[in-house]
Image 1: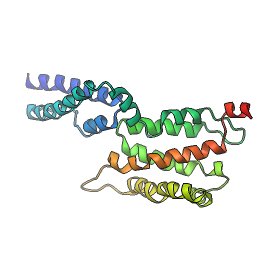
Image 2: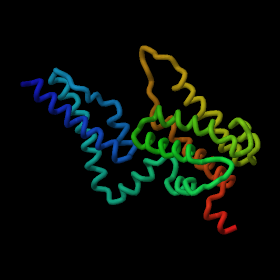
Image 3: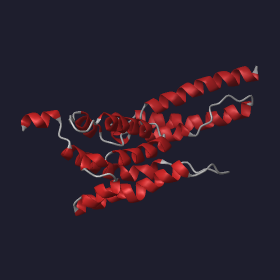
Length: 213
């Protein structure tokens, strides 16, 4: 009987955690990211999980009382601003197809909102490696080198800081004690990434801008 009760509780807990992640708030997603919702035969494990879930429920109740939460969560949950992403989707270029870049940006936003920070930081690195041809060069280091001073300082953060973090999580072998990436490791590069996308937009005008010309 104890196992039956415990199993039913874990089923509900899994659905609850999935629902929290669908909200798209990385702070909430991070709260549930490391919760173990795999079934356990021990009722003590279920009680411990229940305590952790109550903390998340309290956080949800606080957010439900905030009338601005929906708009705040949408902004907080996007690594790349959604309006900027829409501008990128409008790009049409006969020389370079932007669809893969758009897809990677969409998946980056999704991973970031769900607190899947390993996926997010690896996607960020993949985008950095993907875009140099837009600037007429082969490497992102060359992209940075040809920029004006102000933009160079901003994009250097992606090349000199964000890339090594991604490489760390991509190349480090399994260890006895792992240190998972957190929001703090990737969030500081939102501004630099947005500047990069605006630089890309200046190189690949949208169909609307072409019509205006």
